[in-house]
Image 1 (cartoon, protein in one colour):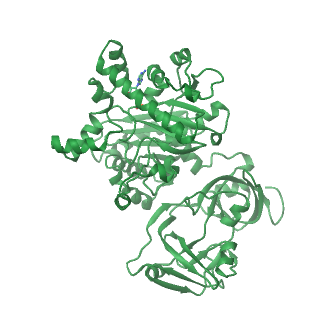
Image 2 (spheres, protein in one colour):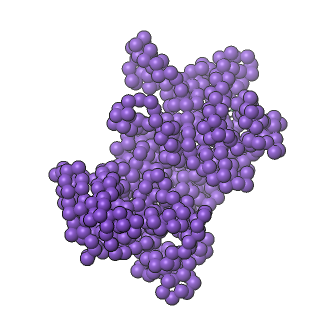
Image 3 (cartoon, protein in one colour):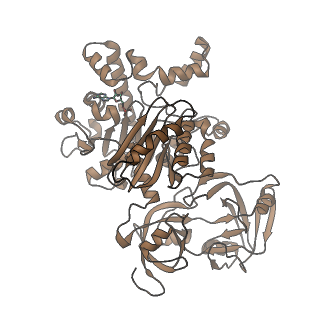
Length: 589
Ligand code: AMP
């Protein structure tokens, strides 16, 4: 089983056919100097040879997409609507996103019959808490332009953190790790118990550490000063900050750390200063992130400089003893990471904070994400686990209902794409008024449907004063009515309130795997951390466009102690379910 990983830059195209389970490459190819609009020709030229490599069985294509903005916080199936939504993010990364989309368009045209999945650089950092996300700018201005910290290098930070946890023999959820991705672009991330809680790159990949040619942090007042004193405009500042700064600007001899180290060793003062500034900035971030997490169990160095420069690691790790982090100089000097031996520990035995060098592999990281999504790589025999999505109360609306609630020009605005293809949570919200009480700010799931449907939990029904039947989606006949309130008006429905019949979406291959068919009713065991539970009466729904996933409501999730995450609707939880047996026959599947 293979995944083609496409990394499309403005003038280059990196293609890599990866076996997701191991990271082994079946074939790779890089096309440089592609003219504008030439991605498809480049792909058509390179692909036949790649696919002809022995034994390639292409299951999906994974696309690296640099920016997911607020909309995309997990790998997402690429269809036309999702591609359009990504196009809307171009202002956030005007150089990268158009190139990424050119790669998507080219690959979808050449390989129309396999699923295409976008993997976002920003997604791993979607867990940044608000306090870490915000710039202290006027809120209205920040919201208008989507100005906040998003973070980048997500697949790499996640990958090396996972690798580090494996090496340490502990669950990622039990560790506080600082990952330092030091390549031409460089960023550090605080991974607290498996979640990114701070990261050094911000709205763009310009903030944070000293990089090859990028400045990283500068006093914003410096920019004003340059505008005033040098008469620089946006393009001029862009060039200086992105292309002429960082190691290149400081050293005067370019951005290659190998050259800088060599020149510094030969007494070049500028190069020594560049090296010192690079390591100082990084050490400062490590200290800050240890404070953010209240401690640190491991520091990970990765990417071109992190994996190869013993000197940078040595200088950075100086004075970190107070964190319990110390280098074994010999291990550091002799360290060599390879694809076969990707983790080397360079701290002494029993160190309180371990220091690791981990070989990153972004293509493998992307392939794994794609495989987890498309193929459910976690499958093991008949007990292939099923991801759970928790549905908070929500409504589905018709076009007419949208107009009644949000005005004649009202429409549903995607806020977040959900895991089932084509479905999205909307910016818009409504209030539900029942005979006993009301519930405000209820989410809407788009796109519009033929009938309105209001899905609530049993607890919600008590609050509203209703008694709604348990139904499969779409079956609203003879259900209670309700009044919806939007900013532009009220709408009273004669029927439409249901409790969703808990169900599993699956593709025909999954159904075959479990030995079930559409409409079957099964039991599933929920393997949660604190309250394992077996649900009976679970409906099986089979369709080739579905993604394997069990949907339960918030009452059901609470009973099994599963958290929906702060995003609310249909957020994937960490729990998984195992299909146990058919309810009707009680036969083991
Ligand atoms: P990346 O963007 O991850 O490919 O990393 C590129 C950076 O890694 C460049 O600045 C290289 O100079 C640096 N690099 C690669 N090998 C070494 C090495 N042996 N010592 C120091 N820096 C290195």
